[in-house]
Length: 373
Image 1 (cartoon, rainbow, N blue to C red):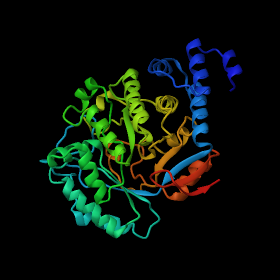
Image 2: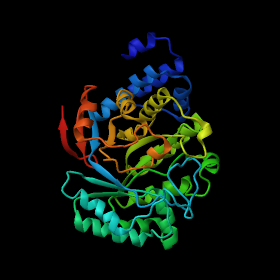
Image 3: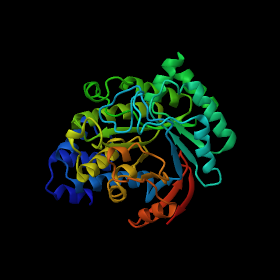
Image 4: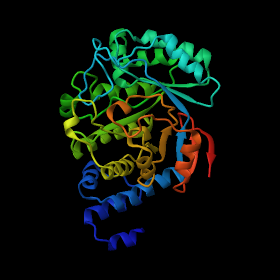
């Protein structure tokens, strides 16, 4: 659809104006983003988001070969949406890994062509900054080229507070031990009122942003997320993305933005229900349009399922995460589409090529490892 054709279609003057700005690579405002949420239909959003995606990444869809280590699901915090964590007093399906158990997982992948280990879990008082520093040093000794992406800002805030160090000093220490980047979890929704309702006792929005800023300032990249589809409203999503966009303007340290769908199973917010696949796709598209300073938008396929992830490639998404290898339980415990989240490299490539895109294996920082047309 060209601009001249767009002006002849039956859409509002506001949407026409927004489309003209996007086509001319002019940043849209928070108010205009909210208009997209309130007025724009799926087809319009997909068309516009794919123009942005094409300008940034051409026909490429990225993935990486990674595995997850989740040291524990025992947690001092209580998030109402979480189906994964257990209190320190609970037994049953709670777990706690030793350093040796974590290193054993790394050893399993030593001769595999993986490029990244992703380490996140519950916040446990025994898992200190120094304890993990030792783990990282041992991982690097075993696999010096393995990229360590570790800890949500929630985990880091607790570690640094317990160690009585600043965010910058804490990040520098972990970096010196071998940590290479941080994922984007724990952001949820930044709005203070919403956080008070769903995750009142853990790191707040300002702390999350400050930790990522500290990482960026020492040359460490990170990702950003947003948990959507629960009690938040559209304006809360816009505010959340705007705070991320502002920090990216300042530091340019975010690699990718990952919208995370709220899943209702086995948590205290099951009564809220879940949004539709249509809303998932609209949300991907709007985030691609609004976050003009983010190079990548990722669909986390274990959470939304392979089919929806494949559909998202028509709505601004250019990254499908990684092979995972059935090494994460965070979303399967919440009722995610993929109960055993594992894809071979060949399956991921086929998913991408089936929609006419070029599959690109990347490393964590989007360096190209291989590609398939």
